[in-house]
Length: 78
Image 1 (spheres, rainbow, N blue to C red):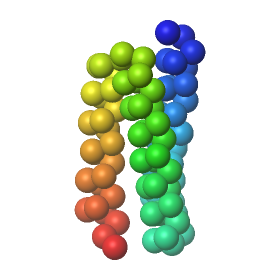
Image 2: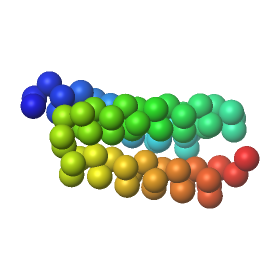
Image 3: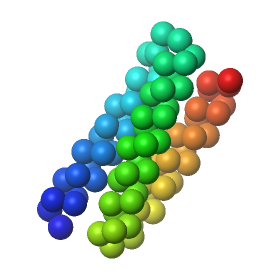
């Protein structure tokens, strides 16, 4: 469990860092790139959680992904 959990935590941390970087992005295209990074890391973490049978973690990560999508769509209109 430790290795998968550590990897999920690292992916989640990378996603959150990318999400935070969206706000400091100098251009719309770089904000979009950080958004893409956040989504990719969360998708990877979700997949690993699913493979590992971590239902609660998968559910939490899916909810966070949806929050980030909503924020991006409302605060960074393209």
